[in-house]
Image 1 (cartoon, rainbow, N blue to C red):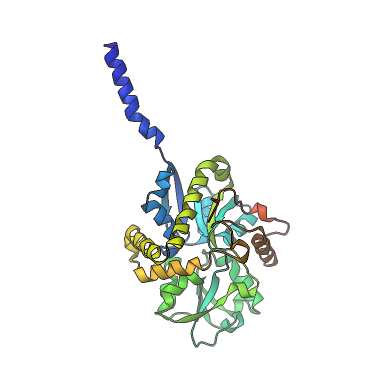
Image 2 (image 1 turned 90 degrees about the vertical axis):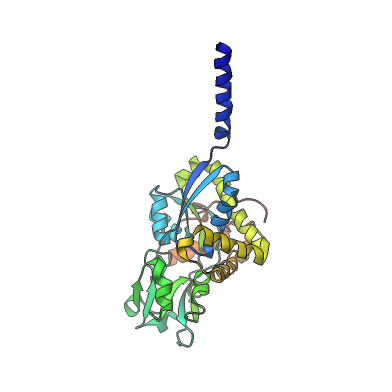
Length: 331
């Protein structure tokens, strides 16, 4: 009887063992926007099981603005935020304990789309006109500095905030003389519906980083090893799309459509979105670095711009905002 009991115990232990060995560590990820090509890296890694192979389970939720994403991650409601790092920096300056663990869109991508032939070329040209934006999205904190640096103010421009999910469709439908969003994000969706030019925030003193990964400082301290795996797979997934060229871009668009069927994404627009965002991945200071690496010089410029706009208090340093410790080596 003892032999039978021992044999049963060993068998039970062997059955249970794989579950222990292959147990996955769960991360909840809050995006800052509705589904688009900008999300391709997440869906690529999830669909192909790349996160799972590293023992990581990713629960990826769409969002409605970087400001909201930063607040939720700062409050511990999500483990990882995927949003605008400039907004993260502003939140950090207000005492929210966030840190960037990898930058994807590192060139300034923020701008105002204006209809072709409208004659609108500068912020001052927007005076007396309606401009669509989303107050809770990544442009929110930078509207006033942009207008001020362009020689005007919010009092002279009719800024109308709409939900992030309806912003582009509102503009394409013909409302507004301008719309504020990420240029590579918006271009594929408006180029046919309402051909437009754009005014870059970067031309008016706001050289800012864009999309990247932000976490609570406690998450970085307590879950560093698992977080490093997540960060590694995320950037390696994007690098695979970049290296794979058009076939990989097409496959990434198909994966995105499969995983977000309710979004009714148009394949060609998703592919265009992926292409456009890739153009913004690196700055001159990160041109020969691993994808995700953040340059101290870029953060110095960002801090200077944020201090000048009075969005963060003077005296902070780049190391307060980011770390490269989790970015995978190699390109």
